[in-house]
Image 1 (cartoon, rainbow, N blue to C red):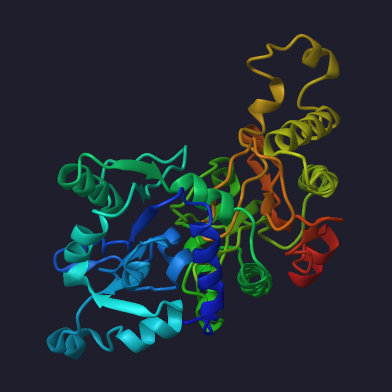
Image 2: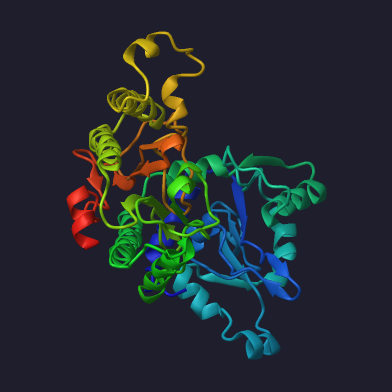
Length: 428
């Protein structure tokens, strides 16, 4: 990882908070992410499973974590299992994680070789009343590939079928949605790097370039500022492509007179930022583009004020959609009379804004957290209204990351240009 070291206290506190939520005489088992094969003899760049990182800070594969705070054998109350040192692997791949480094990173005192994992299980499974196992429970994610967590669940149920099993995911969601001071600092760093990349792009001559050339400017800035890459596949969408919500091809020519919608965020120490901006390819908004942009900007500024403890993301969505509906009427997309006659199942604004305007952000760009859960201080939520007028080749989205506090919300991206005059001046 390129980031500056993170204090092990953060991971120690995360484990302590998690174990306090466990049922009496229960234990929890977590596993690291596996390497994902790319093709031939290649793997995709490794990225640690978010919950495992949250609890350990460890970035390597073939690692496991055992948490059993009431284990009668004190040796096994908190154990990190890591891969045994392999001299040949070290020659080819570089320095491996050793026990001392694992202790320094995680704050876990008991480090054991991975090949002793099943032997330790054989003992502790005789003591415990229940086992918490983890799985990806994000409600909109579906994968045809079973990951290492799924395999671990099957292993436990086959080898120890008479034990009671519990879900770790709801407990971790409860913890991860409210960020600690250290986590907020890491997210802020990711936001700052993202802002620097946007500043760089504003100075890059866009007309006639390809979308991926614009992306390359972002990639460059991320690399020199210690980001470990993008938090998600970036959207660099010119003209009509901006009306494709998850456009990621990024391979078309940028045409003077069109808009360029950007949706990208740096990942720093596994924490992600999420920024959206829309800029004129030639540096100047047309009258109609400015009209539409400022409509979205008004909604963005108004919606941010909703971000206070007690409200839910579901409520934010509904209120912000109302704001956008009023702006769409003013833009001439439909009339107030037509709204009174619309189908409740197919409201007219949905033709021009098809997505929600808020989600949790943290270790994942779409971080854990329910849209029906009231917001609490320490949560970081996106604010991203937009408008997509396909017949006019206008796609506009504005998005910042907002910290919920006891008082007013704090915009972690307030320093990143968003006003028309700011953008046009920087593009001169």
